[in-house]
Image (cartoon, rainbow, N blue to C red; front, side):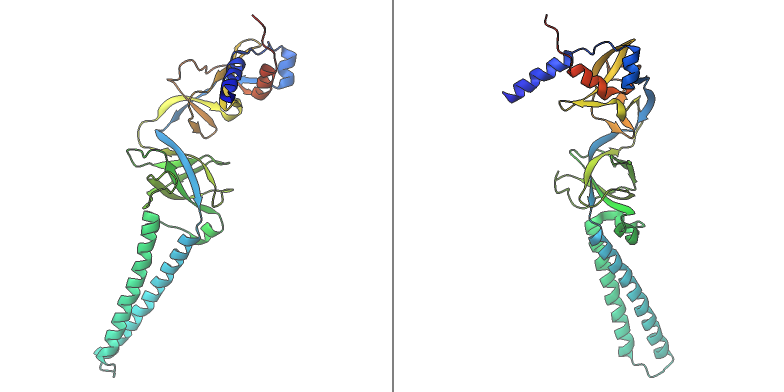
Length: 288
C-alpha cells in the first residue's frame, strides 16, 4: 500500500507544472540558466572504493626494510670470514659455513615477508610506497570493487569524494572483495579527508575511445522521491522538470550521453533549481 501511494505521489509531482516565473521572482530566486558544456567520458564501470587500514601493510614494509638491512650485515660478516679464511688468519671453515648459513637464513626471512606482502597486496609490493605518508593519512590505501568485473584491466579510478580523488597504478587484488565476492583492485593515492573504514562511490576507467556528451553540473541536479531531476527553461519564464538519465557521475557533475534522447542541453537551470522544485511541488494540481 505504501509503495502504491509513493507511486501515485511520484506521478502527481511529475506532471505538476512550475508556475510561470516573472523577472522579479526569477531574480529573487537567483535562477541562472546555462547551456551544457560538451565533454567526453572514458569507458568505465561504476563501483565503490573502500579505504583500508594501512597498519598491517606498513608493519610488513618495515619488517621487510629491517630484513634487508640484516642481510647487508650478514653479507659483510660472510665476506670478512671468507677473507680471513683465505688469508690463513686462524678462521676455521665452520665459521665461514656458519656465516654463509646465517646469510641464507636472513635472505629466506626477507623473502617470507615479501611473499606475505604479495599474497595480501599483490603488485603493490613492487611499487614505491611511503609508509610514513600512509600513517600520516597523506596518502590512502584503497580497494576498488564493482558488482561485475570488467573484461579488461582498468587504467585508473575516480573516487567520488570531496575533492574527487584519482587513483592510478591500479593492481589486481590477490583476494576477492569480502562484500561483492568479486575481483577488486588496490591502489595508493592522495586522499585528504578520507579515513580507513570509509566506503565511497567510485568509477573504474577502462581503456578505449571516450564517449562524447555533455556535463550536467552537480548544482543543477535536485533529488525528489529518490530520483535525480533538472529544470529546463523551455520558454521565457516557463520551466519544466526533466529526469536526469542514468547514473554516470564524473568530476563536477553528471555525464549526459549524446544518446540520451529527450534530455535538453540548452537552458538548463544551474543555479536556483531547489527553489524551483519547492515552487512546483507546493503548487496544487488543477482539477480537470
